[in-house]
Length: 330
Image (cartoon, rainbow, N blue to C red):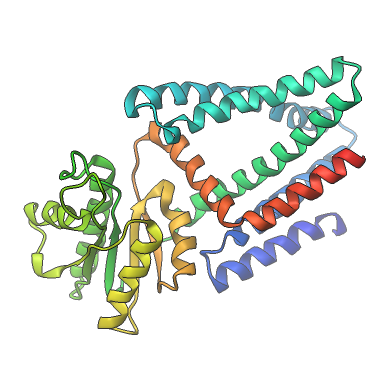
């Protein structure tokens, strides 16, 4: 039983964290640690079993990550080229391609370190591997918990549905990504309206330098053209970032009703980071995600993870420094 104590401990921390506020990134890390310790405990238990099946399982579990890394690298590179064809040559669209190539570089560096008689190369390879493992662990925590967060059923008794903007096509038209958010917001509105208490829907988005009108106005027009009641729409047309979307929408809701409750709508790849930001901006509500094209998801999710990592830059820099020190002095 003692072997499973760390896993149980971190599962309890996860449960307490979710109960306190499910929008914390620490919940994702606790859950990742719980599953990691549970996996080690199960492997140790199997290792004590004297059977061919147990040995086969242990060997498969040890070899699977190596094969998985190569397969993942290939999939990311293929997705990167697809993103370039469909979305154009922008840095955000290169992320999956760069990550796939980065994995191959780390593997090549490790192989070179085992073949070459160079202590310096060994230290470089070891440090790179430790740092890559750390960020890989955080990324798995992020996508795993983000998936679970997206499966949570949003509450139905809210005062507001807040739909976050995401840019316009040609400066005036709602793109498919934003239309997906608006349709999810409309569905949440209609579900509650059917119970006799329709919320207000806030379209949140200001006017960018390449846009001819504020995003919130185009979003409202999209909804009303499809039969949505105009008198149930509130415009928030000052924001330029997700943080401002949430902050300015909170100000509107608080001014009208200090005890408001809301649900925020964005795309599924963006939902967990938006939830983290909603907590930081003291927004009283959870975040719901809308569907996203499958090819767009990898790069978008990587971009969201990078943003969350930068938000917690000091703790990540500290951990990276400690890992580098351990590698250099080891």
